[in-house]
Amino acid sequence: MKTSNHISFAWFITISMLCLLANSQLTTNFYSNSCPNLFALVRKQITNAIKTETRMAASLLRLHFHDCFVNGCDASILLDGADGEKFALPNNNSARGYEVVDSIKNAVESSCSGVVSCADILAIAARDSVLLSGGPRWDVLLGRRDGLVANQTGANVMLPGPFENVGNITLKFEAVGLNLTDVVSLSGAHTIGRASCATFANRLFNFSGTNAPDSTLLDPNMVSGLQNLCPVNGDSSQLTPLDWNSTDLFDSHYFQNLVKGRGVLESDQVLYSSDQAASTTRSIVELYSKNPKSFFSDFANSMVKMGNIQPLTGSAGEIRKNCRVVNS
Image (tube, rainbow, N blue to C red; front, side, top):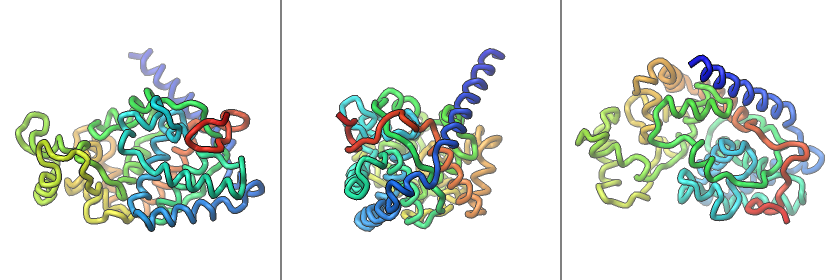
């Protein structure tokens, strides 16, 4: 047991040191001279995308999250190919927004050719998606370079899933240098998210062999509505908002829902209702449900931390000309 704890601690220190090193190499003014209008170019494309489809804000934010947890923040999720992260179980037919990233990259390349990485575009797009949805602003650290390979196996293993408990979710966050506050604050991104029936239908009729819905789903109107949307043997691709009654506004209502037993995903509701949550995440959920400013502040800090997960800098990787493929 001591050996296992020692290894876990050593791994945590290694990740922490890598993140600190990366933090020292990324800066807010990285493109001040090489692409001074970068932020305006990205903001214009994000604004247009969200006007066309409000849901796109959540999709672009999720792309950055799913990228950083696998291989670090290197835009590997954007690479095409049958063995790419796009086709890993957590991303296949659910990760989206690739065409918007293409439009941003094209606009940036027209102004600053060969300068701005796809990884940095994802980081800026995530911030702007939150801000334009009513959420907090933060200064995006820049200077990442793009990875040369995708990691489909890593995406299948490292990304938190909708059926996981607090312990498993926490371990996956700790593996990339993030803590309990980051677990809860970043889960709050679901305030503008949507989920398909496939990710929560197991909770609606015969949860864990009980012949009844999940007992932590406390709102009978919500249960009835979800059962109608996702009947047994129904269309598993049907979507519902993760934050009932506050679908497209980035706010703290998601946490108020968890306190009331209205978390759509099992992995969301366990942050408040599970036995593990009592000594870990419940108090943070309660804080955010009552204090939106604390949520906004912590979310912004957690996004900066997540954006510092093992980025490629200096001469590592490359600046892709096309975010979908490595350069020739």
